[in-house]
Amino acid sequence: MTDRTITHRVRGMDTSDGAGVRLKRVIGQPALDMLDPFLLLDEFRSDQAGDYIAGFPEHPHRGFETVTYMLAGRMLHGDNHGNRGDLTAGSVQWMTAGRGIVHSEMPQQEEGLMWGFQLWVNLPASDKMTAPRYQDIPPENIPVTSPAPGVTVRVVAGDIAGTRGPVDGVATRPMYLDIALDAGARFDLDVPEGHSAFAYVFEGKQAEVAGETLTRSELAVLSRGDRVTFAADEPTRVLFVAGRPLNEPVARYGPFVMNTPAEIHEAIADFRAGKF
Image (cartoon, rainbow, N blue to C red):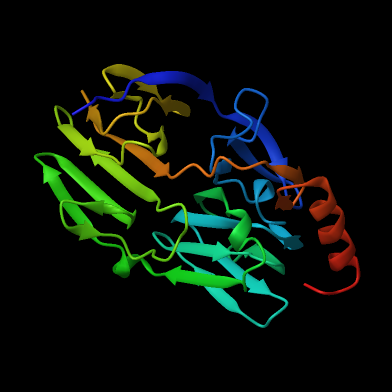
């Protein structure tokens, strides 16, 4: 076994997106532009309605996948193909935008805590023009396992000792885990050796990841290896995500992610022509 280590640290940067939703951008900012195949990671969290109520009105996507994981609150998803989805606390939506979609994500509450993550995952060139697809997963369909004393893991994607997450058919073969550790807990996680991986502490003051202390709102980029260790002196939760890097050129323009500038120009033209 080869233990992973922390190679880079980055803190969430306060910003806003959509119609003014306040959030922390962790991947997709100057300190960490991307981590192949991951293009963006946002954490949105506020109990002030003014920070989130305007939501994310209609906007297009092409060439990648968006993953929304709700921890608290409700969002209503809708798109220009007539699809609708109510994202409640504990639910996940894994959306493959593929060749193009126009969608919105709007809060379904006027007060209270709105909290969750959005992750952007790149698609390989061979899949960028695939048909759009949704995997809408309610909380009760996300399996929970306890791989060690004091450790509870919600498995959205990937496999832990035979417990497999419900997300499937994703080219980057991801692991997406919500890891809760009690005080004094310790956990060794097996990870595919070649996957890019990161850990982000989102509840509690700190956690020990790969033998180092990681504090709240801090992300650790991990080295190659097939095992990573988690521990905690007090209760905490860590988001752990890993995926197969694509090692392909990336051309980005706002909500479009392709391989070449020419493909970006084509995406803009197709969107303006109403072809999404």
